[in-house]
Structures are given as C-alpha cells and as structure tokens.
Image (tube, rainbow, N blue to C red; front, side):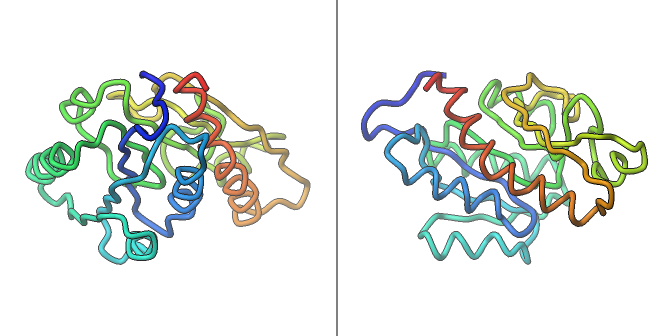
Length: 193
C-alpha cells in the first residue's frame, strides 16, 4: 500500500458486529495527524450493534447488512464501498466470514484483529481455549485477511501474560486493552510509517 501524504488519507471502512470499542480507538487514531487513514464508513451485520452509535457521534456513514443471503449482501457491500471510494477495510469484531470473491476484490487491503497469538486459537472462544490449555500467555494479532480463517500474513502481535486466577472475562478485558493500542500501530506498519 502507498503511504498517504498530507490530507490524502486512505479512505477506510470498519466492519463491526458488537460494542465497537476497537472502532472507537480507530476513529480516535484516524483523527491524529500521523494517521494514514480516515474512517469514512461503518458496516455492521447487526442492527443492534452498539458500535453503530459511533457513526452518529462522529458523523460517519453507516450501513447494516444482514448477510442472510451472503452473495446479495456482499454485492450490495461492494457497491457501497465503491460509491464511497473505500480503499481499505478494518475488521473489528466482525462476526461474519467474507467470501473468497469479496476478499479478492480487496486483496491486501483488509486487516483484522484477533484475540489470540495466531496461529494459535483461530476462530471463536479464544480465551476459553487458552485457559483450558493452561497457556502462560495469550494476546492479540493484527493480520491481513485471506480466504482461510485467521490465516493471513501477520502484521503485529502483542503478548499478554495470563495470571494465576485469570477468568475468561478478565483475560478478554486485558487483551482488549492491548487491541486498542495494537491496531493503530499495525496500520502505521502497513503504511511503512
């Protein structure tokens, strides 16, 4: 990707399904002068996603697609992204898997944040699985999205120590805090900044 200069920030869409805490940290980051991206669109598959409130708060366009018919939803999505000149996508707790065809259209331009130290614990229930396996560390990973689940090239990772009395909730909270710091750093790295 070409680093953006001056005011030409890369127009970015963030895909969410839930509270949007990573979305919020990306919006804050996008408003800094060092950020190479601007958040211009929020996409969700969940009309009740709390993160959609940030669209109103920060005056960002949003669209909700239910993904019941994946082909149709992705077709609509591609058209929305094209009309809004979106060049990059950040997945932030987006709970739908995008098709190979969709990913191909944005090859090398989709990032995801995952709450484990990939390649360990791809998919769901990462904290539970890490605790069940008595791991000493877990963490989070920002990676490029390819057609295999949580298998794209890793951009950055952050290790988090698992303490003795760790619960799924306490670990999730700890890792989420690190996610908010890691995602912006990973974006800077992608743009070689």
